[in-house]
Image (cartoon, rainbow, N blue to C red; front, side):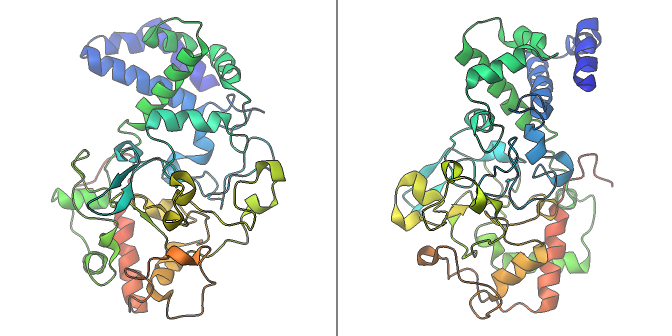
Length: 368
């Protein structure tokens, strides 16, 4: 709260406004939206009860995933949990709306694990009203809290004064979307980026890991190495959907929430994309996430089954030729073509992980 008040004082005193007035009009507006969006993103007074913010489940130091690296983030109401692990919001600005690619015969895009949200702004409005997340009963509740925030006058300055609840809510979510499109959230500042710019060299282990990533490990089949058309950079995802054969996670706290908040099938299966598009062939499939910042975002998988990168890479390698792992949560649609029997040695698994660790942003600057 002190940080919010200090920033607002700077706004009112003209310090920030004076600097922004020198910038291009569109750039100035964008920066102001990002600044207010970040304040909203970090505001723990916007949940019911208070104490949880967007940043609780999407924290900078964790690659914008869960602050405490939990299997599933606990909601503002103690004891309530969503059914899925918190995805990173890094680079989500480049995820297209959910659509079916007839040529590739696959669904593509959409935010959240199941693709149910078509845009950053739409996605930003959901957690406020989700009873197992921030817990507000309606938009009015959120808007009233925002009206009492120190940054509300700046929100009004940017978007204009209105008494319409839907309009104010749209202003809130637009500012959040602006922050999620900021350089802070999408810095492209990893060692991999520095390597592509010729600023650093990879070690032999990292180079070998990259070769495995492209070839024997088959990772690049979905975590593609082509530059994204919009980003102009490699996002390490094709935004498609897959059933990796991940087992049910017995440690998922969502299994123990009251029936009114239970979001899985009656036999505790998460249908993923299938429940959104209402197609049995898509049951058990989840969106392929970016691998950027993957080393920071444990645990892994839609249900947080894997505690470490070592575990999930080993699973990809031996799923179909080992009894080390339980059966898939939803067996019918498991991808058996691109993982499960990769034939990687322990050293190759380690080298592959070494390469993936080069995808971690430092949120500061790339050292030459």
